[in-house]
Length: 281
Image (cartoon, rainbow, N blue to C red; front, side):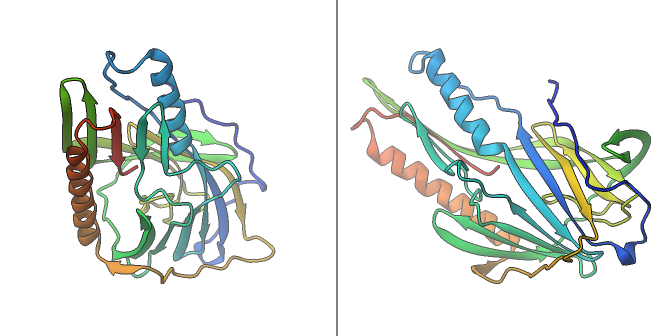
C-alpha cells in the first residue's frame, strides 16, 4: 500500500554538523494503516467508513522531538480538534490506551535509559527502564528526505497486539479477549548530516537523526527540522506518575484488558451494544 507523504519543508540547509554543537527540534507526522474487521450482519458499509475515519484521526498526529546530543523529549503537538482517545461511533467504542495528549517520552542516550510518562484510563504512570538495543542492519541504499541524504537501516522485532471485542444480538453475547504477537520488519531512514543517535517514538541508535520509520502498519515522517534554534532548547525529564518498569506496565495493561473483558461479559445483552476496544497504538 502506498503511503501518501507530505512535502517536507526545512527551515535551514542540510549542512554537516559536529555532534557537540547540535541541538534542535524536529517535527514528525504519523500515519497508521488500518484493517478493521466488522461483522457485516451488524455493521453497514457507512458505519464501517465512519469507524475507519474515526480511527484515522486517532493515529494521524503530529509530534515534536526536542534534542541535544545526549537527551531528547518526544511529545504530541496539541490542536483544538485533537481526537479523544476514548471515542465512539454507531454503538462502537474504541479506546486507545497510552494516547493521552500529555504523554511524554524522555530518552538519555548517554545513560541508555528512558522515562515515559503516560496516562492509562485516567491514571498516570512513569515508565522508567533501559533503552531497547535494536540490532540495526545498515544498508547502502539512500534517498533524499527534504534537503537531507538518508540511509536505510532495518531490524526485526516482535509486536504485541492486544484487543477486546464484545457484541450482543438476539441470541446473546459474544466476547473475546486476545493478545497476539507478530514479527515485523522495521525500516528507518537516517541522515549522517545530523550525526546524533536520536529518533521519533521508541527508535534510536543509528549514526544519524532518524527522519522516517515504517514498521508495516505505521509510518512516522519528519516534516521540519530547526537546528540550533536561537532561543535554545530546554529538556526536562518527566517526574509525574506511578513509577514502574516497562514489564510492570505491560502487566498492568494486560490486567486492565482482562477487566474490560469481564465487564463486557457481565453486561451480556442488556443494551444490545457492540464494542471493539483496542489497547496500544
